[in-house]
Every structure is written in structure tokens, then in C-alpha cells.
Image (cartoon, rainbow over all chains, first blue to last red; front, side, top):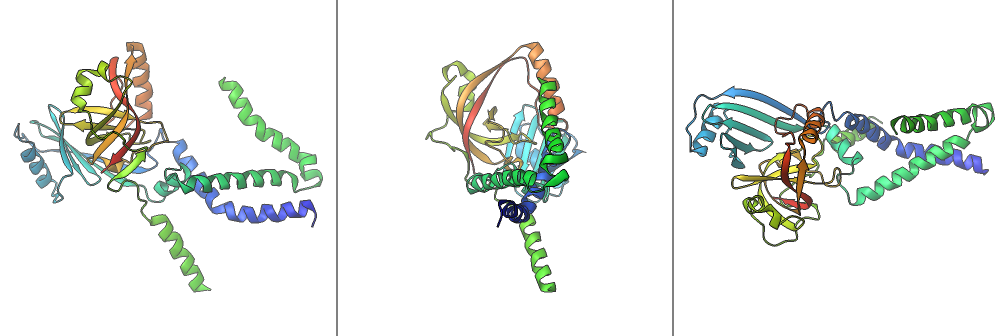
Length: 182
Length: 154
């Protein structure tokens, strides 16, 4: 088997192996690129409610009134005064911030974005440990794909023909951006 | 053939929907905590110069978390709160840890901001954290935070 034929076989089979993770990393990449515009991991929903005047000096009573009003039966994880006028009631994936005695309430509910949370977990290597090594292996595989992809075609469509101009254009774009930003 | 497709679809759905263990009780972040006893946050803030540059541990309730990056959390101990700032991406605190008890360890540091710096920071902060109700814009003057190296969320 010639070296070029071997590269074609490797490129094809490594490509199949990498396809799934490439899709995951690409989708997550777009998601986290726009972190300024949205939260790629969590869906945070906020709403306001007026409870009416609340008793001062009795945080448990204020929390109880809020929970009853919202028909929440779960026991809070914690009640914390975050400022003299604000009590925060922490529940599972839900936080109530109550202004005392005015009774303004902000209800914040948090849930993971399905699929995106898991994709970002893998892409950003939040799991650490063995995933670090697997991600390194994937990076090496991508390098092999990139380098083999450049040389497997011969002729006018290969690296000797238009291929070299496309490779140079691909390199020029990030270099020009760096030069522009410097 | 159909059964193969069903199996593949089920495996994919299971893989994508499987909840990841992100902050179960006693979950360690970074290097965790090594000091055996905590320093009350009120003590740190009352005499910060005595602790500056030293490794301290604080215990309390997580009352705020960086929503988008998980790059800081606020721990409240009785009525005093302090921010634990960690290196972006190295330690990531989950938003779902809010209200849980935690221990965090790191070095106490002072953050000095002039009014111009605070204004610029507030602008950048507002852009980066728009929509985050719990996010406080940096203020001019000196504030104290812990440069966190690890934490345990219970």
C-alpha cells in the first residue's frame, strides 16, 4: 500500500471516528462564543410578585408567606439576609429574593439547557480527569485529519494546484485578524 | 434492522439526557480545602490587612454564583459575604449550587479600583453580565475577595 493510499484510509476512518465529537464541539463552540448574548448552560427565568407588607424581624414568617403564596411545599435549603432589606430563600434550583417589609418578590428559576449543558460540559472539559486525555487524543486526531486532508489529493485540485491557495487563505484569515487587533 | 435503529436511537437519547453529576453533596472543586478550621468572613472584612496574601478558609451558604461562566461564587457567613474568584474555566461553580453550604479556600486579596477604572469595569461588566439580577457591578475603592484555589460544596 502506497503512503497516499494509507493516508486516505486513515483520513476516512479517523474522520468517521471524529464525526460525532466534532459536531458536539462545533455546536458547543457556537453556543459559548455568544455567551455575552445568552446563557449557554442554564435557562434562567425570572418573575416578580407583590406579597404585600411583610413582618419585620421574622425571616421565617416572611419566607412562609412567600412559599404559601407561590404554593411551594418544598423545604428551603437556606434563608439568608443578603442586605438589611432583602431576604433570600433558597430552594432546589429556585431562589426567592424578598424585599422586607415592602413585600416585592423576585422569583428566579434555573434549569439546565438540555443537550447544550452536556455538550458544553464535554467541550469545556468541566469533567476534567480522564476526559482531558480523551480530548487530547481527539485533538491529535484532528491534526491528523487536517494534515492528511491537505496531501491526499493529487493534481490541479491538490496541494500543488488550488489547494495551496486555499490553505494559505485559511492561514491568512487568523493572521490578518491578529495583525488588525495588535 | 429496525431493532438496530431503535437501539441506536435509545442509546443516543439516553446519552444526551443523562444528568451529569455536577455538584452532588460534598463535591470538591479545584484542590478542595486543606485548612481544618474556617475564618469567619466578618473577621476577614473587619481586619483584612491581617489576612492579605494569606491562605484562608471560609464556610457559609452560597448566595450568588456567576451565571454564565461559574467563575465566582459568593459565600455568606452569618451576615457578611465575600466573593470567591477562581480562574475562568479551571474551576466552574454550577448555578444549581445556590443555597448550599460550602467551604472555600484561597488567598485574601484586595481589589483597588479608581473611579475611572470602576466606570470602565462597570461598563464591561454590564455588557458581559446583562440580564443577571444577582451580578453586582464593581465599585470604586478597595474591596476584598478570595482568590480561590478550591472549594467543597455540601
